[in-house]
Length: 111
Length: 119
Image (tube, rainbow over all chains, first blue to last red):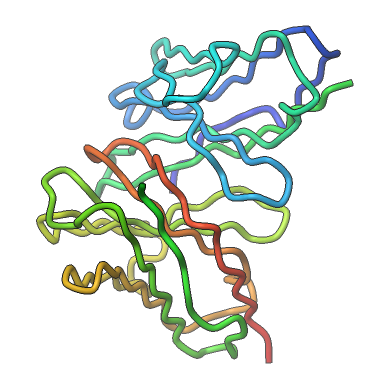
């Protein structure tokens, strides 16, 4: 089963910017929308970005997403202590039978 | 307001079958474009997608778990049921029920239910 590759962790000081990469094959990211999910400690994940770069209502514009080829990126600007969480990318994979795949997850550490 | 809630056993013995129920409100699974799925997360590990059922009763399964999974719906009760056979300790984790729109992303999540597989 295919997996989307993310860095295990990224870190920055409050107010700074971090970016999280998500890469895989053309059978998934290359042909489908990418979503991003935020999981705060001890809670269920929450949709952060959908359709590559759209934010659900209530998500601040400090969070942005982009996609290029077979990679996607989540950027967080103006980093806050409350942003410390695990972040997962996800997309549909059309190889064999259609199924959804998540990234390996990235922990954002606010220094 | 869309809500989803998982229910089922907290402890399952190895080789047994797990049955989880997702009870939802705020939408009808007979509405075109909607789906309800299951995602799990072993302790300290990443999310893993399991299965989804759509408004037209179309179903999708994780290729690696397909032989063990069955997803069904009861539209009248606003419930989706996931069964997983031959449970193993590696199946221990939190199981989430999710709402999906337009076969793309998961915009609403249940609180999750922790299932432990142990003898």
